[in-house]
Length: 409
Image (cartoon, rainbow, N blue to C red; front, side):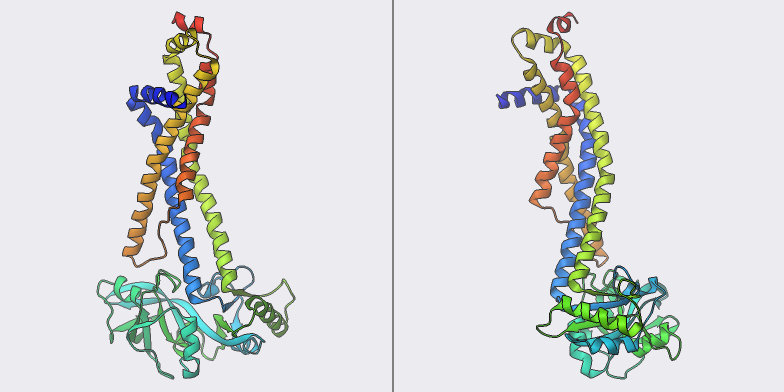
């Protein structure tokens, strides 16, 4: 019986090909937008989680300012400050293996006549911290060498910055003008896929060089504190111990902190929550197209009922019940939604992959389109439901038609 309904509904839609295609357009646009946005946001979320898992979960980041920790490069968004003596306090906390103060900021970089705004990270070059920095940093040296202890005026740049940011590729020995000072490139780091903070483009330099670029002479201010926990230490317990020690040292009460302490797991959770909110907003915006598409289906089905009054009257006169007529029109509207949804899913996935390819061409590997089985069938089911609901009122009108009155037309 259901197969007969499907065949009959399909034939009715094929009789009005142009109208059917125009009706499905609204559903197609809405589903394409939803699928592309969700697949990209899900891909970004998966990529971020993978990066954190490769870095490790024994990392803790301390930044100035209370609230959400948005990473080491967000320190400029608050008036609160961290200082070198805060690093000493954190280093003495039970469960902390290493605590390093870093200077991070954005700088104007001139190379080959072109200017770019690039994140810069200054860390100590002391040899005793070399292994700790290696564990903290996702960047491996691809060409050249690292900055030696007490060596100034030298920088390392990520491959994204060296190869993708200027008309001419940066080579070993090239000079970069950073905030008006000249630095020599002695190392090129492997591509990071976005772990540097801004599309993977990053400059690494000695901490003293970074201080001279971004801070006043003699300042003991730092941008953030990078922490590695001891082997076997409970990371979340260590976070609470660091908070307690810093509250006592800085003279602030609980819930009134002028600093933020977060573990890698907490940062993952925060980022995922932000991405979930963004995803909901984007889907809500894209859902407007589905509402428009649903209205289009309703309008088409009302028109179809008007045009087929005689056909409905004939079917009723030979024994068709109201439920049969209702089912036929509901399946027709459902088919309009489903076919439009299927096309939308395919185009949405293509749009997502195109965005991924464009991002990859700029060296960003964290933006990718991930379409799951749940997303595919969920979108297909949703488009069918939208179509069916949009056709409910026209279907009820058709089912309630008096066969005698319908045959008079």
